[in-house]
Length: 320
Ligand code: SF4
Ligand code: SF4
Image 1 (cartoon, rainbow, N blue to C red):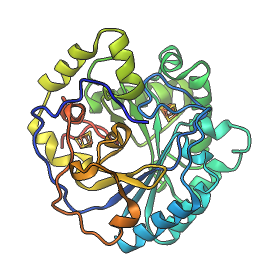
Image 2 (image 1 turned 90 degrees about the vertical axis):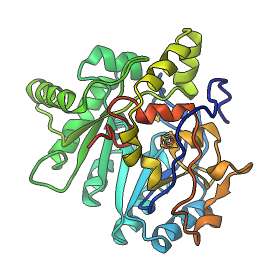
Image 3 (image 1 turned 120 degrees about the vertical axis):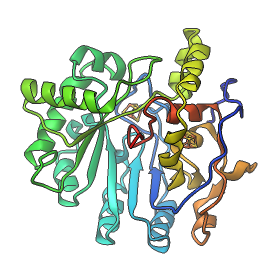
């Protein structure tokens, strides 16, 4: 299902090209135990799409043949895929660093009792959304009861050593604004998060990433319904900073959907915007033996969401 929002023109966004590929991001399935307002993949408990065994096998080959440094696993809730643990184990055995985009509430879902221990044992980096340190705001954006469950998940991770300076277990939190505004400065907000979570809940974490809400999928539709879309697009464009182009994630990452089709990034995947502006998506099987360094990246208006203000991508503000 691809986004058909009318605002995503090929406007003036600068042409960008790929550098060396070091990260393979895969969307392993669209099923999620949550249904958040801002979700750009429209995930929910009702979605059933999942990466096949054959495609998972191609992902494993791709990691090795292309000397991939980082496997970034997203969803939905990626841990709901029955092949999640096998893939993580394979990657870590082959010295590929693994990132799990974890929504925290999954850690307390039925049948997930050993998940946190498994992640710790494999030294999986956890990147988890927590759009605020206030219960009311989190529940409003992500659903009733999500904050309490998230705190429970964070405590579980801390008890295993996640987020502690003396371990290799990295726990990063992700902040995105509640509505059509830019996120505040990452450094300042990180200090506030660290102070509040430590004082109120005795929770520690390593770093906070701030990201812009992308004007696509569920959030894009909400903007249209509220007649806020053109103002938000204007804000993103007016907040463009060219230096953010240097560190934009699509230069060293490709994003694979649950069917094995490959895109320049997760957002382009959701839009069905193919690599190199081709009419049909490329499949991971076709790319295993291809060097894509120097290839053009397909851009549209939504890319201003990556270059606005401090800039943002899957790994937070970009400014160095
Ligand atoms: S937890 Fe993540 S994948 Fe699941 S609905 Fe929320 S934003 Fe989407
Ligand atoms: S949305 Fe961001 S990461 Fe994706 S192609 Fe555009 S600039 Fe690159």
